Image (cartoon, rainbow, N blue to C red; front, side, top):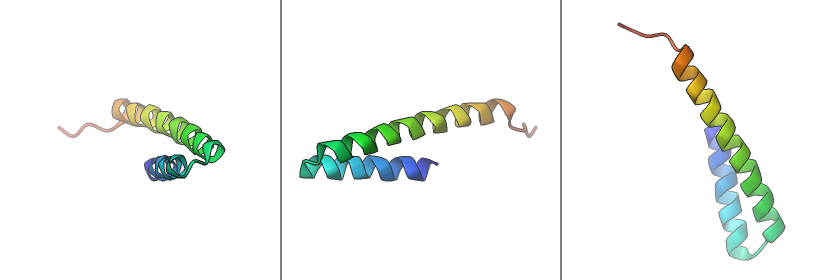
Length: 53
């Protein structure tokens, strides 16, 4: 999922450089949503993970 987020961020940056506003906004919004989903899943996995002692 992090790979998808990074690819959409790169796509948004490239589209913004070339001036394609609609594509850049769409890719940036998808990247933002995926980023927050990734953060939530990461926090959940921190709390539910097995602890090795």
